[in-house]
Image 1 (cartoon, rainbow, N blue to C red):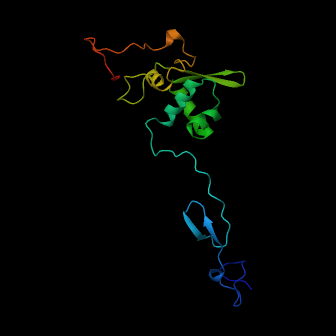
Image 2: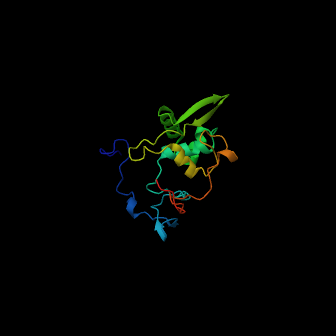
Image 3: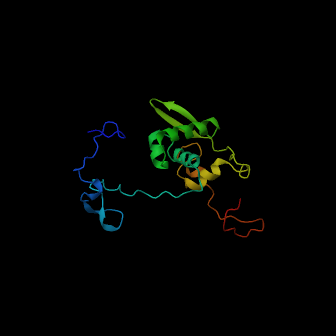
Length: 177
């Protein structure tokens, strides 16, 4: 017997039980905090283990995070950039291309790998921060791990660690922009 509304599914006969009246499997559904929640007779896979919670916004864009990742490791692979930033490899590749097209980094093939060189003396793109260069950002976040071009910093390339002073010689506690 076929139901006209469903096409090829057999219609429920008079003697067939109503699906709503069938017994439901009662299980504890993880993550709900409720014991005895019904699953409607269907087996549900356990919820995925919670990963790190990503905030709804950050101070740096993905472009900034990719640039910092490359500054820390100039020979990094695209998949590793994607993993570290938390984006897809395709998005990482597009961002790397954006940064290269804008002149913030250069790519050089070394065998089968790609070596990146940061062009640190480039200004920020936004008009309110255009008076600053990218190396200011790199100095804050790479913490002396790498020089602007991607090479490890030498003692001569380390920033001056002497205390900052104003024109009168008084110590200044914070960097002002």
